[in-house]
Image (cartoon, rainbow, N blue to C red; front, side):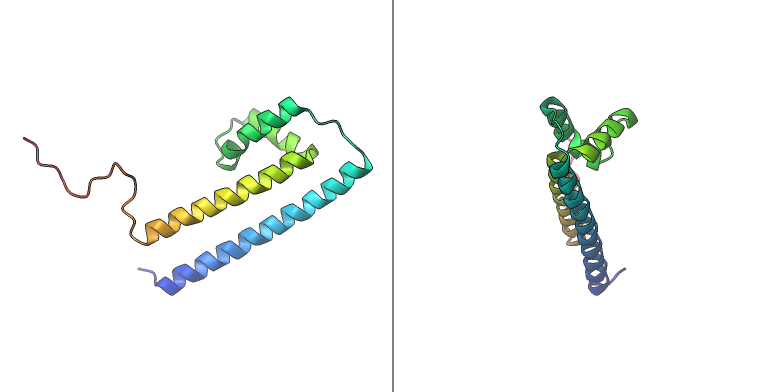
Length: 121
């Protein structure tokens, strides 16, 4: 069994690593924005809508490989969608961390779990 201090230390390390990842993404985004100002690109709203609709599935690795490649290609060239992706990723990390904390605090889990066996008549 791990101590509470050990869990807190691992959580703090995970949060620090996530913040470092976000800082790297933001610096890449800044470079993309500078590039976009220097060389304007046309934005394809239908492609942006499709990419944003797939972001949650992309973060959770639920996309087929061909769709994943299309999302990645679009994110490489579209600054607004890259910004939206950073936000989706941060929210996903926060929710994942919250779920771990609830499980660590003895949360019983889903609403369909029984706390005691039913008597069958």
